[in-house]
Length: 481
Ligand SMILES: Cc1cc2nc3c(=O)[nH]c(=O)nc-3n(C[C@H](O)[C@H](O)[C@H](O)COP(=O)(O)OP(=O)(O)OC[C@H]3O[C@@H](n4cnc5c(N)ncnc54)[C@H](O)[C@@H]3O)c2cc1C
Image (tube, rainbow, N blue to C red; front, side, top):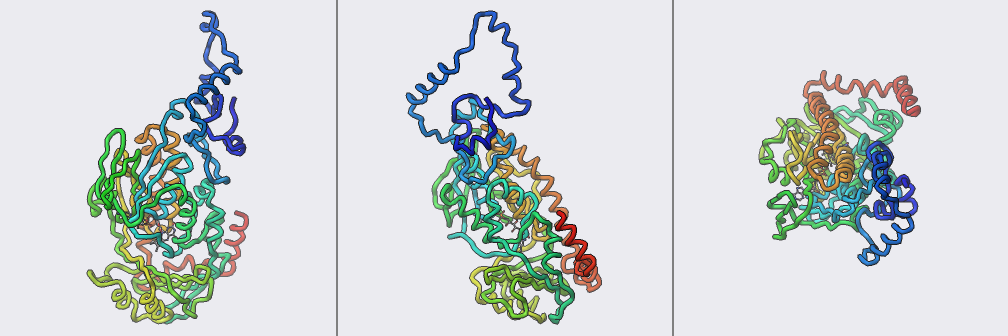
């Protein structure tokens, strides 16, 4: 008998743990029906009545005492639909004999939390190890679309993400003295990102994922990993608190400066491609009056960009991105921003003053991770740790969630064969990651150029989009989808 997984899930049946043999559609299991059994019948073999088979199986299950099997649990999220061919929907006997699988995830950012959620959905146990003492909030605004949006829909988290997303009402480009160059309205901004995309604070995206996994995974805050040891059967990870954890898979989702990557593959300088810019982002405790509620104001001048983004619920983010040749080694971030942006007017003085009152600043170089391979045995990198595409590509959170979703799909499709799952996963994700890395490198060349003529040219597409006829055309196309 075959029934689609959606039907079984709707009736609360744990996949693969019920009576009978459930075969997915497709060509793979067709041999079960097509086999020529004439020789067996000629030898006098008969088919056992179904009633007997069921009665025997039931008494065997009761004798085993396994009345609450845990393998292949149904997913906890009602809206979640198992992807086709994910392996969640197959029930080969060998797979049911496998014990529950376990993963250690390093990092509780978007990549780590999304991976924990997806692995829970395919029945894995997870432990997350996070260096920070507690969960981070705030951050910066991310545009979340593409494979991340599709994955969020499949994983059943899209409604929660949408509820926390915000629409930018107006995007205003300013000159250095604060006067307006031009502005894009809400409809035009939406048309540039497309219908299957949202804008959300990074901390809010993490919060949605955290709420979904907190009851299913242990998160060990204030800890990191110090050593990895693996063989054909397991991976053992020594943590900074002295404990040793064993699992089937180790996932390094610990960002650009991944310690997992260093332990698995070698020093970070072998993998980081410096895009010669720096970024600093922090939450403001008040919105500068010159930026309207719901709006984003931005200015670019001689290799420097600054923006104030109103991100909903009265929260505001200050963003500074500048060419690395403005930076000086060993200068603290407050001194550096003051020196690099101190001559600019508009809301810059207010934003810089806000830096003194904020409790956390994200600041780093803008670098890509270029690694020829993302896995080594039972260790794999995911998210910025593996492929950081940078803010120039504006796609890192999408790749993190899309990558996590696909990893779960491939692990479920290759039960008991982690190397095969990891190589299928990498083959699926790498082309998209490399495309976005190329885009990031192209954007670097036109990001806040020092030359005013180049700056004018780099803003030209947006300036055109702000013109009423172009705006009307783009909006019409957006509405048509
Ligand atoms: C300013 C800015 C704007 C961006 N805009 C966009 C955008 O518009 N769209 C988009 O899709 N993406 C955007 N991105 C990229 C996106 O934010 C990242 O790609 C995404 O957050 C990566 O998530 P991650 O979980 O891989 O890494 P991270 O967010 O870096 O998370 C890593 C986690 O691991 C922890 N950790 C680090 N080291 C260790 C260790 N040794 N042990 C234990 N834990 C550790 C960290 O504390 C952190 O919690 C932007 C990035 C920036 C900086």
